[in-house]
Image 1 (cartoon, rainbow over the protein chains, first blue to last red):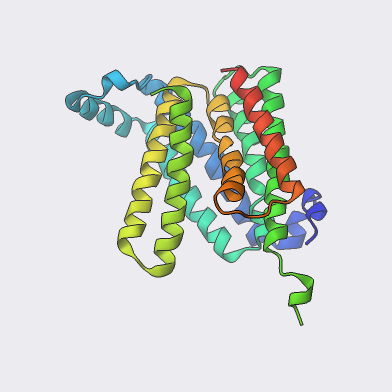
Image 2 (cartoon, rainbow over the protein chains, first blue to last red):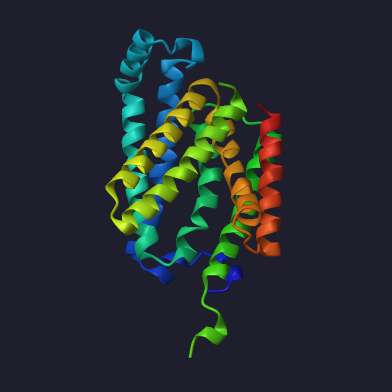
Length: 154
Length: 104
């Protein structure tokens, strides 16, 4: 698949099958939701600083983090994401899996803004957008370097 | 630990964890897989610590600096040839991380 073709993914569902599209959507959703929940939970726990880390305080902190429902849901979602991601890497064409990471940066910031109420300055949006675009270039070049060379195939 | 120290810990521990998991799974070495899980846990703990102090919209983009280190490592350590497309992407990511960091 030519890298340029990756950018036009409007007919992704039809091209790669519903099952694959569902797995890719689940990966992105689990990552975005997981990070959002973890962020909300850790904010409720409060800033973790080095001075906290004496053994008794560490135990108390671990208890607070481990019993925070947002953290628990977030960790569960991110574990699910990890398993789905590994499944996708082993079973699917990488040309669908790798560029997906680019969209998760923008979606995560979208959720942080819309749901978590974070105030995101235009500069931060610009930076996040550049990262997403850069990631598409990096990932598609990874694909190109893994593709079999034309002369290698009989 | 400082901001960049924690970001670096997230990135390096994650990279080490990925390498250990990939190698351990392929060769069936339980100890290496376990080391990979430890690295992943360290990375995740550093990430959660960052999230306790800063916005998600700041922390997650900052960890994209890992892609820059990845390319530099490929060139500097592994002596791989990097395409101009990957250099362009790496530069864009680096610029993006720099801009996002300015809003910290």
